[in-house]
Structures are given as structure tokens and as C-alpha cells.
Picture: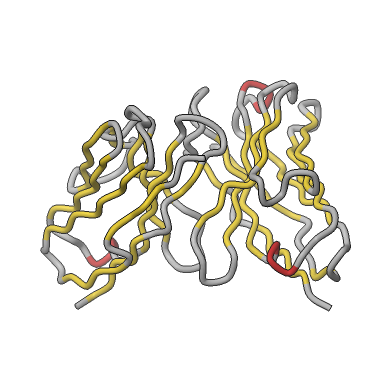
Length: 107
Length: 119
């Protein structure tokens, strides 16, 4: 099974900051990676698919890159509504797996 | 508008069974694979199972293989998850979700259904 490892597990940031979350796969997954945002008590929301494609309706301050085994999600100009937990997910093969999550909270 | 309405969550004793349902609307249900994802209290997301559009192919996480069965009724636009031999570690919110295409990333999610396994 392909393991997904996110770092950091949590981070504190301020409104307006630029933050980067990293996701590493235990083997190459090409670009078959998605990113989700989840707020407390809510279902996850798709942000990014195919490693760097922005889902419709997602603000352009969200961007992502990577291929193979290393991927990043960047939020440029953190907004109050961005404080949440972020997950990566590979869909290269079954079983699909998620990273353990990165919680972004207010400094 | 795509809607996924999860239901069926309950308190069940260890070793018991439960069936979750997910009623879909707003899209052609029979054209999409469907997925169940769960989240234990305070924990991260865990993929549970995916079923192909026609139900002919099913995939399971090792943690539920042999105990859970995913199925669908395309005439009723409904997805199911039959859960048997439930364990305390199956306690979670169970989400049904759909992809936007043939890939297995998930663009639409239900609100989730809480399953609690406890005596």
C-alpha cells in the first residue's frame, strides 16, 4: 500500500501569511494527488486535483505543485476562513490513502 | 445540484451489524463510481470502500475487508454499506462521496452518518 505522509502535522499562522504543507508518497504516484480542506464538524472540501489543478470555485490563493513522490499545497495570503485541517489523498491505485492531516490554526 | 444524503448511523454493540445508505440526487448516479470514507472521533480521514458505476467492481480497505460490503441500487440512486462484525475501532462518521469523473478523488460529499460501536 502507498503511504502518504504530511508535514507538518500542525502549524500556527497569522492572517496574511503564506504557508506551505508538504505531502510525500511512499512510492511514485505520478500526479494522482488531491488536496482537501476540512473544517470542524463538516465534510471535506476538494481544493486541488491532479496535483496542481484548482477545483472550480476555490480561491486562487490556493496553489499546489509536485509529481512523483513529493507534493506541496501553498496558501498565499491566509484568510480567516482558511483555518482548518488539510489532507492530501493519492488516487494512483487501490487502496486509496489519505495523509494524516495538517491542522492550521491562528497564531 | 448534487446531493448526497447519508443515513443509517446508530449505536450498535460490538459484533453487531448495521447498514448505511446514501441517497443521491442531482446527477446521473449510474455513471459514477461511489466511495465511502470514514473519520474516527478526532482522527483523520480513512478511505473505506469504492464501488464502480455498475457495481461490478468493489474495493476495500484492509481494515474492513471481509466484514463490510458496498453495494448500490442504480434504479433507486442509492449507495449502501453493509457493516458486519463491528468493532469499537469502526466507530466513526461515515461519509459517502462521489468523484467528478472516472478518477477516485472526491468532489462531492454527504454530511456523514455517525456509527458508534459500544456495549
